[in-house]
Every structure is written in structure tokens, then in C-alpha cells.
Length: 444
View 1 (cartoon, helix red, strand yellow):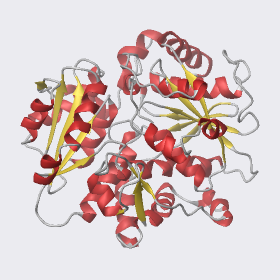
View 2 (cartoon, rainbow, N blue to C red; view 1 turned 135 degrees about the horizontal axis):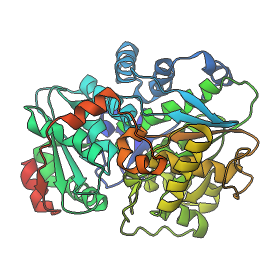
View 3 (cartoon, rainbow, N blue to C red; view 1 turned 120 degrees about the vertical axis):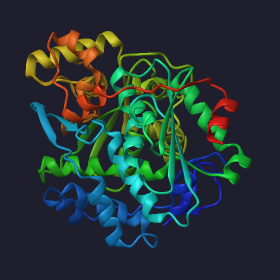
View 4 (cartoon, rainbow, N blue to C red; view 1 turned 180 degrees about the vertical axis):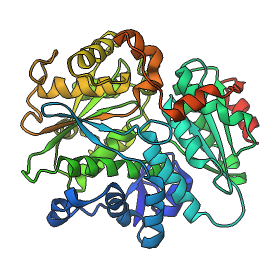
């Protein structure tokens, strides 16, 4: 399959798109065509495992470049953890995406991407993998590429703007003889992302070193994220034809873009909720038809503190920059920190289910769109998806945000062993200025 760019540049193979990251014309790669799943394939979803679904979903995009046996090995090795669907309240399900090694949904895309790159790498020239992170991406990329041959990983994160747990997961690699390094940038996530865009725009730098992106601008991370939307529908295990409403907590909007791709591939989705914190440029676009990036605001849901979401370019491309078409599929929902605290407390005390701040926003988006479950607080919203099944994406383990959720529920949150181990290790924080020259120097 060929991949085209959102700005009309020259089509490329999957391998080229994977290793390019952003396209040379400054746009983002997208599949030239989509092969919708047949009705009988969708009907067999409930009998498929996560890795079987992953293999089926990714097969068309790598056809002719990776043999099917290798693709199967990639998927089986990458997706070696459960992604369960848990009913929180009648008709409201959490798709728990936090059972991977770094306890966040980014593990899915990062692990598949790292193994695809390893499978397609040629020669001995090292590959430099660059990623900006607002919280969870960095740890997932670091773990996914740790000790992968012929790669070095450079991660930029905003100094003082990620949780202590997230920083512990990142900076532990700095004290080891390893191919992974993380740098605390004196600025916001938008500064980190701006720096990566400037670096990829430096033709001379890209010519002299093999530079690629590990953010969701890379199709190698984007496409695997569509897999768990299919897996969620499979676990509903109902052949009643009712559509699903997915509420996706959104920052850079790769997660939601992957869901839209799944819908285009035939998945029975009624609508998506673009659930954000106060960094709500996409909900504002849906309300006004005007896309206006702005400086990000710091919130409890720090991984979503993005004022200029890169993947909006893909969303606009998919809908022909027609806001009315996008509104048929996507509903916007915005939440303040106070609303996030209230949701975490209400859901925990009513059901015993504990949400992290990002998942709380996703839950809030679902209940606001569908109307609350019986006995739940909240409500309002519209009729989109009320007659179907409701799934919100639980994107991070609440223990990663213990300093936020524990005061809300007045209860200690037990840390999984992998997290406790990361917190026990010494941190090695390396700070740099938010300048092109500073990052280019460390790359060189």
C-alpha cells in the first residue's frame, strides 16, 4: 500500500513513511486507500484475540513489505498484555489500556512501532528516534526501544510539567548505559513539539542523520491504535448491530484519529466524543468552525495539555476540512480541573472504580453525550449514541497520578510492581533550554 501526505506531496511506501515520521513536505502520512472489513469478518470479531485482531488490522498497510509471519511475530511480541473491557455502570464500559509495561495506552502504538522499525531496518547506520512527550509517550517510547539494535532515542519533556511518576519512568534510563536519553526542556509541551517540528524541517540535519519521529505523527504509532477499537467491539460480544459511542481523552489527537480510521474500516461506531481538558481547541473548532491553536494551559490531565494538536491536520484531511462532516462523527466535550476532581470522587464512591484524570475526562465525555447512567451525576448533552453501547478509553493507571487521586478519594492507591520499581530508582534529570540550537547540539 502507498501512503500519501496531508499536503499533497509525493506518495511513499509504508517503510518510507515509517522511517520518515513527518513527510518531507511538512505534512503527515495517511493510507492512500482503506480496505473496509467485510461483514463476515466483523461478525467473527468476538472470537478473535487481541493479537489476531492486530494482525488482521495491520495486514493491509504493510502488504508487500513485511511477510505475514514476521507481522504476526511483531504483533504477538508487542501486544503481550491484556486490554480488558470493564463494565463500570450499566451500559458504560472502560477499555483499560493501561496494563502494558508503562501503564498507559501509549504502550500499544510504541511497542508495535519499535518492532516494525526493527523488522524493516537495513544496514548498520543508526536510527535516531526523536519524541516530544507531555507525559506518557516518553516512557512508552523509552521502554519500547530500550536495547533495540541500531537505534538511539531522544525524548524531550517539559520540565516541571509532568507527574513525578512519569518523570521517574523517563529519567531512570539516563543513569544507565543505554540507547535512551530524556531531556527536561525549559518550557511547555508545545515548546517540545515545536522543537521536533523545527528539527524535522532541517533538511541538512535529516540528510546527515537518519532521524525519525516516535510521536503519533508517525503512522507506525498511529495505525496500531486502531486495533483496540476493534478489540473493544469484539469484547462487547453482541451481534445486535447497535453502534458504539467511544469517548476518547484527547491531547494531540492521534488516539481519536485512529478511531476515525477504524470507523472508516467498517467498525460500527455511532459517534466519537473528543473529550478534552481546558485545552479545547478541537471542541471549539467543532462549535465554531474555526481552528485556532493557542498556548497550552497546565491542568491535572497533563498528557492532554496541548494547545496545537498535530493530528488535527489528519482529521481535517479525512473530512475534507468540512466541519459539518466532522460534526456527524465527533462531538466535543471540555472539562475543568474541578469537574475532573468531582468525576473521580463521584465514580469512586458510587461504584468503587478509580479513574485517573485523563480517564475521568473520557468518562465525563461519555456520560455528557449519552446522558448519565441511572443514579449518576451529570447529564445534559445530546442524543448522539444514546441507543448504542458506550465505551470510554481509560488511558492511564490511576497509580501514575497518585498525588492527584489520593487526596480526592482519601485513600492510598496501591502501586503496581513495575511502577514501584521505577519510583525506587534514582532519577537523573538533564535540563536543556527550549532552543533549536540546544537540541541540535545534543543530537549531534
